[in-house]
Image (cartoon, rainbow, N blue to C red; front, side, top):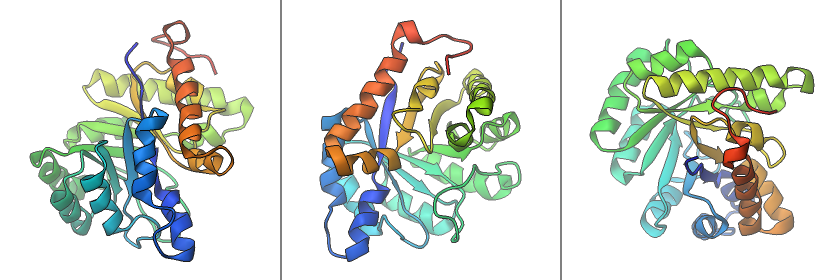
Length: 253
């Protein structure tokens, strides 16, 4: 079974810093610890209102940290211009609303097709991998392929928040959508709300190649330290990804 990549989202390192101003805790210092803890890339969401990650964070992360940078962003001309200037390894285009505390669902790629297509083309032409953050909906999967994005990231919030009685149904939605995405040539990522306690069933989905996880890691870091919290998540993913734990069809919940 192929290595399951872990992208560590450091947005809430910046949230803590911004609560007091200044530079501490430093996002670049946090990013340097990601590889030590077993992470594979940095994820950072540059929001329109700059509520946590700032333009300076993005520039420094790209310039000072050797790990690949995945920049989450809205599909706006401003964000495309920043991405083209900074040249992160990848971008993940997400829906964004000022009032939300966190991203609450996936993009409606079908409705946004006209706006997304030209922006995705510009990013593709620059050699930046583009993923669209979508719900595990086969219609949105097909639309992602049609607008030219080579990858997608499934919003796992419904699975993570589901009561025990319906969690298996949400996991099946993820499995089915991931299988369809892989079958039509899309690279499959997933994230949102994943914790050490619930990551296993998602990590066992064979077609998923990357998980992006932030809040749970930063929260646990308050008690055990940032590097140790990453190691805990890495270990949980690896246990689930072991060949004996993975099947091509249904996965244990």
